[in-house]
Image 1 (tube, helix red, strand yellow):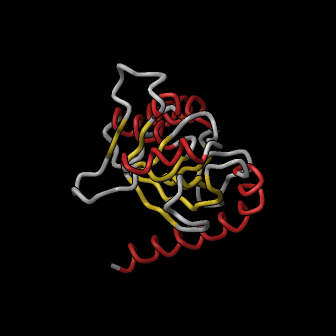
Image 2 (cartoon, one colour):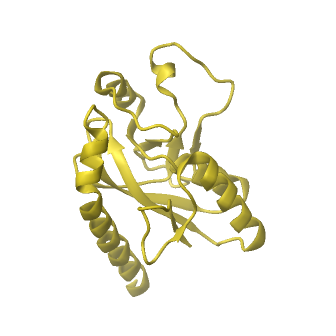
Length: 180
């Protein structure tokens, strides 16, 4: 099953689950309880912490929930805040999730040495629910912005093209899988 966030980030081939960690967790849990999918593929936009370029397509099976305060030693968590459905041992770009969009470029650069390269609001919830229900899962993302002061304006300016690129990428990957 292919899923996406919702609101203005929908695709004709994906079922919306909600925006942010909470809506996604609630709606995906409900879906899994009543009609458990065999596989989950999340499709969405993402912000880059610096290495990924605008309109890059990133595939990952690893997500984190790391708040910016952690990077400046102003917070800690007793929770396991990284989840992965990657079973083949390949190195993933870690996708960080929060209910906030990061705009502090200097602080966000501290994610890169940790292997955390991009952010998407929903992906951690998707993988956490997939893990709970033992469902293989992954994500495909198109970079719309950098995590800086222009994040929102760049997201707005690039979102339509990112959705087109994601649609092409996913449909081509589906075609590849059905041919092989």
